[in-house]
Length: 397
Image 1: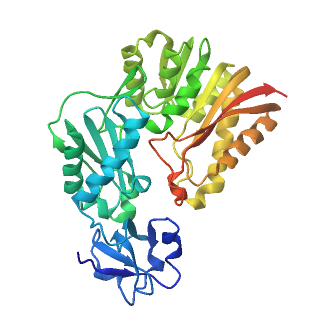
Image 2: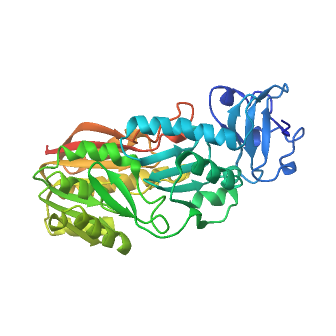
Image 3: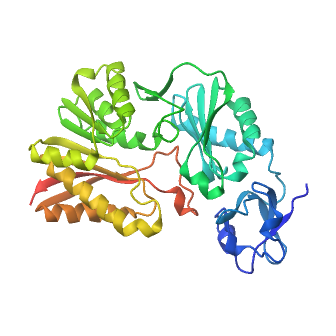
């Protein structure tokens, strides 16, 4: 096994030896191993300044993250056998967690396959390669997935904006199987029709599954408002658990149509209404109309995508939560979430508290929410922990 060496500067191996997998461009000794000598996605041996190999990875000279470590030591080449092994290890966890084959199968760095995401919808897989190293190995990944899972279809949903950081084009294509047939996500006894081609991300947000379980036991007999509803995951789950009236709101016309169809499919169409609207505008309109809900769910897209946007994003979260509290009934429940990695968990709760004090309300934090276990957190890579949230009780002061 012969791989070109990517040498690190003195002292720049400490983070990798502590468990991280990323090498930044300013950590590379470009005199000994010029980045320009590598093509995007090339395999390499990552070596410290003394010449001692740390492991095998891949390089992208065009990216701020210049290399990612895939295997420690030099015993395991970056090939299809390694990918199959990592898939089997990932699969064993998901099969331990879930009785049905509906989950995130691969969560990038946390599953030892940095730059790769795979969601499983029964016999359909939706994969996303966000790095040049994984993009170059799509055929090997496809073959490994077919070997391990024998899917009916494999879709490549490579339209994430983050691919631009790796100088990769956005493209959605069928990687295996024949097109056609409906694709579903399942949570418990419910079934949601998804679109693996035109839907958001990979089609469904499995990361909120256990959090929706937490809400389900609190929803019976309640009037529920589900903002940023997408396909109705929160609202329809609440209706299925006995919520008396559910309003799902999303800015996408296609999503609103899907919410209505999914509500009918699950037998709760009579208690679920879908509305197309901007979330902030709609919450203001509900406030002016003096509408009140027993449960308000706020599950927005990331308001903070870059660290420099943190201050503006924190203000947006506070304003959103304040609007949510203004349409809560007395002694109501606020479910608030953030998928912004750059928003600390404590900052989200602090924004809720600030909004409550501005409205002369008091808050009891009842349940802390986090991403589901099929999105495992890598303790050395803070970026793998991104989803946080709370179920709060809001009372008069």
